[in-house]
Amino acid sequence: MDLVNHLEGRLLFAVPKKGRLNSACLNLLEGADIQFRRENRLDIALVKNLPIALIFLPAADIPTFVGEGQVDLGITGWDQVQEHDAGVRALFRARRFSGEITPEEESERTSKGAGCETVMDLEFGGCKLQVQVPEKGSYNSPKDLIGKNIGTSFVHLARKYFANLELEEDTAKEGTDGPGVKFTSKMRTKIIELSGSVEAACALGVADGIVDLVESGETMKAAGLKPIDTVIETTAILIKSRKPSNPELVELIAARIRGVITAQRYVLCQYNVERTGLVAATKIAPGKRAPTVTSLEEDGWVAVSVMVEKKKIAPIMDQLSKIGATDILVLDIANTRS
Ligand SMILES: Nc1ncnc2c1ncn2[C@@H]1O[C@H](COP(=O)(O)OP(=O)(O)OP(=O)(O)O)[C@@H](O)[C@H]1O
Ligand SMILES: O=P(O)(O)OC[C@H]1O[C@H](OP(=O)(O)OP(=O)(O)O)[C@H](O)[C@@H]1O
Image (cartoon, rainbow, N blue to C red; front, top):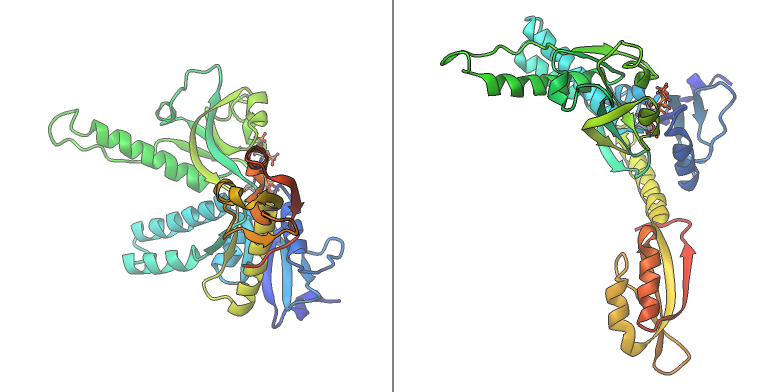
């Protein structure tokens, strides 16, 4: 089937085709009951039960497609959206400096090009974009890298980061060569674009420091690098274009995804407690909204069911047990809707 000719009337939803975010995205789509079958090697899949087409794209390209409005919705890293926005801003700023466009055109085109809106944080794919330097070298602070070579895949964020650093340093030095002497800021740090294996750049003599993503820190440690600053912290996000083709469907998908995320974050805790212990128990586990309390077929006792954040459940069970709650059960939540 020629899928491209079946996109008419469908909401286009971009998801990372590979890499760190791919499998969590596929789980999210399954949880939201977005059913599709992806043919081998095809980057478009029609959703069977909703008027949606999934477009599988590199995570780094998704902000461009959504920002320019060709695709309505997308999942990618916050870092990728920031990198794209910084790139768009730099492009139009340069055009204004060269006199190609007016300041008004610059602001209009910047807001059009960098036009993704964040719908929600998806709470996975968490990592940090960090400045890393050789552990055994002489660089200890980001300012030590001014004027040096920096390897990165995030050229626009790195350039912005070092431009700010240079400006800070220039401002601090202002006047030190004599009253009223102003340093003119001209980017001195060289940003070298690398598409992968950035951590090898220092050992290979290509760069003095790098700006790259760090999750566990194992890759950088193995490459003999240490962090000296964090440029941004990032997680996966759901983004939408400013004018999606079907806003109601965007809302429906957002509500389903929100439900899946809440279900992943919470468990349902059920226990029995004497009515006299209910106030103390509710203080320990107040729930997302409030606990549901039903009477037990035993005088003076109630059964309570309450949503608890997964990461807090163990100490909460300990405390409930301590104040006399019994038969404490913890159940996974398959899905939720507020
Ligand atoms: N440990 C990690 N390393 C890199 N990215 C991560 C990590 N954990 C989460 N991410 C997120 O995953 C996004 C995609 O990164 P990933 O390197 O998997 O992309 P990719 O499309 O496979 O690109 P590449 O071709 O560079 O491998 C990042 O922008 C970031 O938001
Ligand atoms: O802190 P860690 O948990 O070790 O993860 C961080 C590493 O993972 C990413 O690279 P990836 O494996 O995606 O390959 P790449 O170098 O080709 O981008 C990133 O660029 C780091 O190198």
